[in-house]
Image (cartoon, rainbow, N blue to C red; front, top):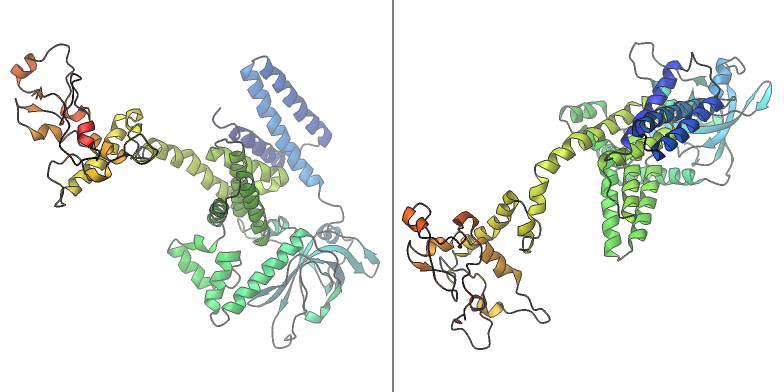
Length: 538
């Protein structure tokens, strides 16, 4: 099976879609669905062992769909009961008054053209009824104006802070077909939004031990600040640098975005697989230059890609490309070749298992759809059109590869030496019909080698079409040192009738690079004493 990963992920995605369509009407226990999926997998394995191919395939499809259905249900069950937005919508929290929200900063404060943004992972809220635990993310923005010109507090990612603000759940616009802003932020863990009227309303409660994600968030904040400092006098270039390097398009003006979209180069402002591919190639090349082993190069590249994904934030195109690169590098450790569709399918399966709701994300769908079209259409078309010629033009010096090539590829391999011969005839020291292009002084074998330099042999192999032009019809021809033979004109009937039955007839287009006859003692050409004479030896 050429695409063993494509069908499981398709069935898994189908199960997720079925859950979204029938979840409100079906009230099946989660344990029942999971047990059904396990039973179908076991039955499919038994059918495969008994060579019931059709039955095992049907059972496998049903099992993967049940697994997707189970994953979507498990994601819905994993939503905590004390989610801040659910508490407000159920009336347990009053969103009409300001409350004290406590939690840890997810990242460094993000400077925006209109103010400063803070994102907090909530763990507690205090109201008039007391303090109790909550979960979810809060996005609060401090707008800059003349009345709020105080310097922001030096808070960093990982700090525990308290915000006094009136938070409300995120809502979408009522226009049909409008962007699902609430779902977009919910996939990032943000469920509330608020406005910070004064920077003094945000206070630091402590500096707990940071996690790995918070350390990477600090690195991202430091890089953004460094770009602002380096390009402080050129804000427009700084905005483009922030977008192209770290994916922050907050400072890119709307008019500039429209210009990039009209010219078809908007993708340069979006972080995608191009950046991941460049990093992968660079670190593989650097590992080879440092003479690292294959395992060391692979581990180094995967660690760097993981850090890059954490720094530029979790985006579907970046995550997809990083997973594909990691799967490809892991396959190289096992000396296995991976098909593009298989790699993309495995990456999609990993993402959907972790977050089944990503199947409704437009970025996820567009990213994997683009890769799927390339793998299903472009790669096979290239493999049947230009790729054979690319492989045929490799290792032109090695004449032993000419025999194993098909006719049209062999013609391309022989065209190179013939063109080189025609170009060399322009030099004064090369005659018009000179067969050997290298100097005879340099044709001797190198020390420790018993074979000839492949250059002259390749040139002679490519000059077979020139040999019949050296003589006229009826005259003797041949390489120096070979017995003379008649030139056969296929258009001349008399010449064709005189050909002996046991002699093989070869046309000029398929002539052998070596014209040989009966093995006789070859006469050496006069040459310099002690030097190797190529034509005499041939």
